[in-house]
Amino acid sequence: MAECAITGSIDLSCDAKRQVGGVKTKVWRVSAQRGFSYTTDGSGYLSALAFVEYAGLVTLEGVQNSHSGGAVPQRLEGGNLFYQHDVLVKTLPENPTDDEVIEDWASGEGAIILETNNKEFFLFGADNGMQQQSDGGFNTGQTRNSDVANTLNMQGGEKKLPLRILDTDYATTLALLESYEI
Image 1 (cartoon, helix red, strand yellow):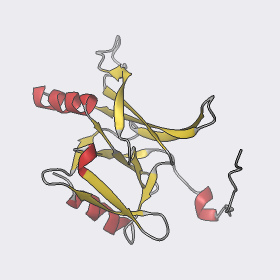
Image 2 (tube, helix red, strand yellow):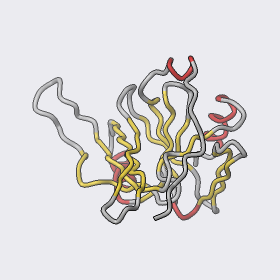
Image 3 (cartoon, helix red, strand yellow):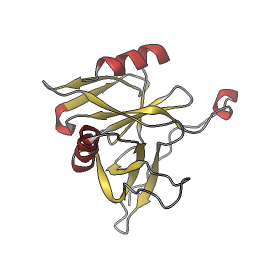
Image 4 (spheres, one colour):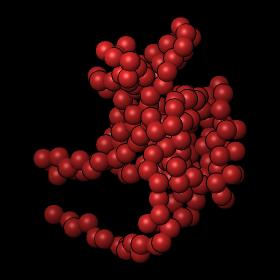
C-alpha cells in the first residue's frame, strides 16, 4: 500500500494563538451548487467565485454566537478518508416568506460561507455541497428561556478541509462576497 508522505510543517505564530471562537451573524450560501466554480491562488486561498446566470450568494442572518462550522476527518473501513463538513445555522424567522427561505435552504444543497470572529472566511461543501440533516428544525420551547431559533443542521463530505477565502485583505474579501449577493 502506498504511503501518503507528509510534506510540510506548521510553525505556531503569536497571531495563531490569539484567536476568538465563533462566527459572525451573516451566512452566505451558493444559490445553485452546480452553478458555480471557484479559483484558488498560488497560496491555496480561494480568491474568486464564478456563477452561471441567475446564480450567486443568498444570505441568512442570525444572532451573535448562534452559527458554527467545522470539519471532522472520517476514516472508513475500506481505508478511504474524507472530511465531514458541518455547519449549524440558526435564525429567527418572522413571517411566511422567511419560512419559505428556510424551507429552500433545507431542501436544497449548496456550499456555505461563514465569517469567523477572526475576520476569516471559510467555504464549506465547495465541491459536493451541504444538505440538511434529519435533526434541527423549529421548536416553540417549553419555558421563557428556551431556544426558539429555527436550526438548520447542514452536512457534506469533501476531500479537503473547508477552503479559506482571501482576496488581498479582509475588506476586499468582504466586499467581493457582498458583490456576489443576489
